[in-house]
Image 1: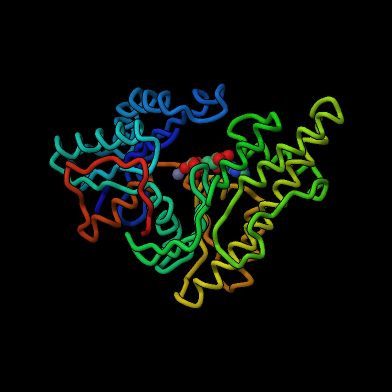
Image 2: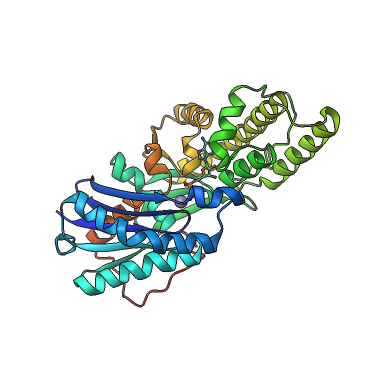
Length: 342
Ligand code: KG4
Ligand code: ZN
């Protein structure tokens, strides 16, 4: 049975994991840099690159020790080669190349997005083709996953990613970084119809997203409320959060309905999968369950720790690619941008 060691370093998590072909995660060592970036309210690329470098060797040693293996018992090394913050990607990919070269193992250069896309095959054994909604801090895409390396993109964001919109609105409301979970918690206490925020693109029949107009509407509302009330208070924060989230839910429902209308006529979909950090949002989860039911498809969501950035998903792509003989040469270059489909 094939065993792959995976490395992830494209954003603010440094992670190393060992995964076996029978879908068993043998180990997962992860260090998040959230505390390092929190004072700046977002990920600082230079700080991220240095932190990856400081952590990666220790995490590598721990991942092997926890899996009770040596590097010689691993069949391949998989490392994120993009897309992402280039300094971090360089650290992880060079580390992976060095390991592969020193231990004479094949290298698999992984597209981080393919990691998110194939995670449900690690956690739930989902068969191709399936629909994927990828909603994270850096991405907001609707795809049909037809096979390994075979993606059809139905829609993407024209400006902000969904997690980015949550984070920016949370920051405007004075909520702590990363804002997504804090904004969801605040929304639970608020009135979702307190403010009438726009639902960008809704009704145009397409599958793309545009979230910057919604963000601007939130900013203008906050400025108006601060001018009126003198300062932000708990009620305004909760009401803005709830109204923002309600707008997001309407946008998601409209966009996904359009994408599924196209996807279901062209492909025998087996499931609707959701990946990325925003998949942890309960209100979004409930809305997606309803959509999936209406389309008579199972909704598959990985556990939160495998929805957010991790190395098990990179190792799993390694397993899938190794199985197909898809390995890479050591001169492969790191890529800041790397779309999943043409
Ligand atoms: O997948 P991820 O860990 O990193 C990226 O590759 O971007 O996603 C992180 C994003 C952040 O924007 C974070 O605020 C958002 O996911 N997020 C949430 C929730 N939990 C995390 N957004 C909304 N509601 C949540 N509960
Ligand atoms: Zn990610």
